[in-house]
Structure formats: structure tokens, C-alpha cells
Image (cartoon, rainbow, N blue to C red; front, top):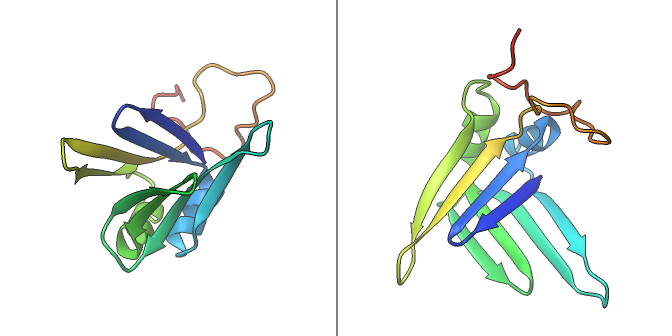
Length: 122
């Protein structure tokens, strides 16, 4: 799972195994470790609850409904789940997407578990 954050937008991209895991009702999480002992974590969790995002103790926790997760995982054509959450001032935009193969090869990057890019020539 990859994360991209820009202002009030969070984008998560998941490979095939991670999408299968979420579709089966299990959470996916990753961590980045820093010199000095700090850790940044992010978790995507299907639950019997509405979509939400929380940041506490260095962890971004994104919750999506079990039903939405299962439907997304089971549909090859559905690229993502998109939500806009209200804030006290403004909103937080959330994009959870399938990670596609790159159109241009990248050295040292394994793309075997990614989804076929719909823009790739056949």
C-alpha cells in the first residue's frame, strides 16, 4: 500500500494482494521508520462503520465500510473508493485506489502484483 498526501487529500493505492485482503474484511497497514526511533504508520481498515479518518499517535487510520470494501475488491472495473469528509473548516478528500502497472518500466520496482493498466496498449 502506498500513500500520497497533499494538503487535505489522502490517496492510498493498493496492490492485488492488499485489495483481496481488504475485500476479505482484514486490515492492511504499513510503516516508515525514521532515524532516532520515530515511526509513521498508516492503516486501512474495513469495519461495520461509515467512512472515517483519524490521526493519533503517529498513525493515520482510514476506515471504510465492509460492504464497500468487498464490492470494490470484487469488481475488476471499479478503480477506487472516493469519499469527502467534512471538517470544521473545509473537507478531507479520500481516494482509495487499485495500484496499476506503470506504463513506463521502472528499474528495481516489482510490478507483478499490480493491476493491469487500462491505458496500456494490448
